[in-house]
Amino acid sequence: MNNELKKQLEATMPEVPDSFHQAMCRTLQSIADEQKEANDMLNPKTVKHISRSTIILCFIAALLVTSVAAAVTLNTDLFMIFLGKDKASEAAPTLIQYDLAHKTVGQYEIDVREAAYDGMSLFVCYSLTDTTATEPLDTSILEDPFCQLEGWDVGWWHDGIWINGVDCDIMGGSTALSSRSDKNGEWLCYMLFRLDQSSLQLSGSTTISLPIAKAVPFDALQFIDVDGEMQLLCPEEGTVTFTLDCSRTDGIKHLTPNIDVSFPNGNTARVTRADFTPLKLYVKLSYEIPELPEEPTDWSDEAAVNAYFEASSSALRWVNRMALVDEQGQPVFTADQLSEYDGCESWGDHTASFVFPYSDQYPKHMYLAVMENGKADMQRAVQIR
Amino acid sequence: MDAASFQQQAMLHERLLYRLSYSMLRNNDDCADAVQETLLRAWQNREHLKNPGAFKAWLCRILVNTCKDMLRKKSRVQQVELNEELAADDTNDQRTFLLNEALSQLPPEQRSAVILHYLEGWSVWEIAQTFDLPAGTVKTRLMYARKHLSKVLSEEV
Image 1 (spheres, one colour):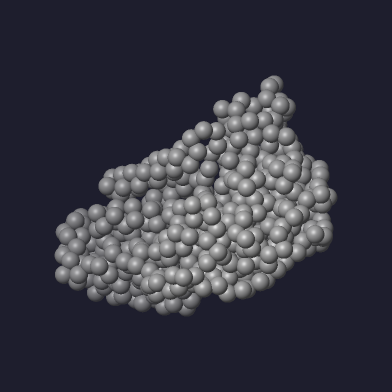
Image 2 (image 1 turned 120 degrees about the horizontal axis):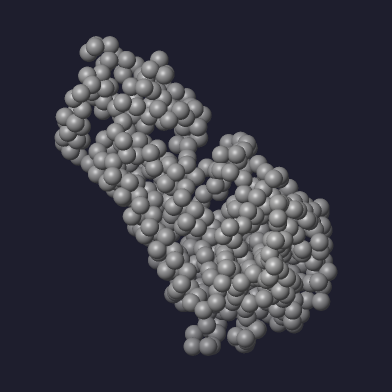
């Protein structure tokens, strides 16, 4: 019956009409144009940004994962790239582990050169080298580190990494940079994965697999059902795997202040968590905005994934103007001490996430305060410690 | 996923998207509207696609939800008119015409299950996973649909 029915059903189905084909092409083209325009607007000079995924929060137009193709030659030093050497503690270099993996794929050499875990984020630096190249790569071909270079058989091909064999989505707040080096055919990629955004905590010896070898064809990917959720198995051929010792967590301190503050406008907020690491200070803020409607009016699908717009807009009015200050309202960091990754990195209906540079002289009492005309509004200051 | 790979992946499934939307909406203009809305929704929510291997199923699910939204907005009168329009289009093959009629009489959920299972070769399990339904529900839909199709075809031929 099935084959017969299939034949009959085939006969009832019209060919894809031109109107449908054109509708698809037009829509996809407009999406491609829109992304190109967004990339150009985000940084018209030397860098290139793309939006990526977030899990915990739903954000409007925030850059959740940012990738940057820096049009300069960079040295291989994770902490200098992401933090600046003067912004990490003396303990920071002890977190870095070197020469973790090597793989040859045809004419390409892949090396995982450095990796580190500070209890919150995973930092990785790897290089891809075309051994047939007779000169350094031209800066004009620098591309998004989450993509393969045009014409190359290796490079990033999947929106996720495998940790101990488990497929993990790219976490919101993650960042990547790429650069050519002075060596012939060498491309360097620096990745920062915000594992804390997915509540991932690494400990002990941890296996990390990066999708940076030869891309696995779509149809060859294998999935397994784990408690009703499909997980992508780590394909050995398409990945480079290394083992990282994640037991080095000296100097990491967690605080859960949870000190409620009521703002004059009725909003309430509290810092739910502050994580001091040898590399960064990570702060999580929680808040309630009473004027928000219970039922957001913006479009939402069945999973309500896009139902946050109104709430996020309201939070945006003050959350992204918060700075780290002492009890007198003096900023802990000057503007030139903050990198482009510091400050409010994401916000949602009820929570926001902040990152600040490391300091060995944080004030004894410290707040997140809304800044107005360069001054901290201490009526809207939330105590961290 | 960047726009280029999104574009590439989506175009790979053009025929499936058409068939699935047609199975529910039975009107080419509506199918074009549905696929446009689907692609935009998918692109806006691409960060929620955890596994790239699930792209096809994920896109189909958004399409089915979009079609359901469209059907909810349509009046019953309009649907009857659409079905009549469809019937007038196919007159060459009597059996095909009847099957089309029989399909049109099915609820959209049963129609889409029939198209995916019998025409596209999806397993019951795949359909259940994609649309977040118990496998038993999918089997029941297929059973009712098959029963109805058999009845119409055996009565008329």
